[in-house]
Length: 114
Image (tube, rainbow, N blue to C red; front, side, top):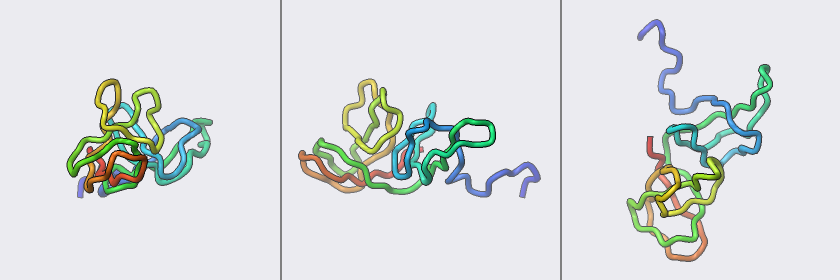
């Protein structure tokens, strides 16, 4: 093991986030994508932090029809939340669907793309 190793696997890491981030929300942090494992909490430095899981499959919601493997995005203006879209323009890729769903609002299973 390298003497400078900080995390063994780095799959869940604490990051500074917006105060509105809640456990279960998809989060985009300048190219890092994941799901909040914890609600945002204020740190000793007065910034807010959440542990973000960057690997795995998570439930999200979308109104779009989705096929297995379709890319799913979080709204570019949001950068956190649970509502996803298949529209790429001006949005951030968070992962790919692992199951199909119809074109009505509902749950979609998303494999995080990091």
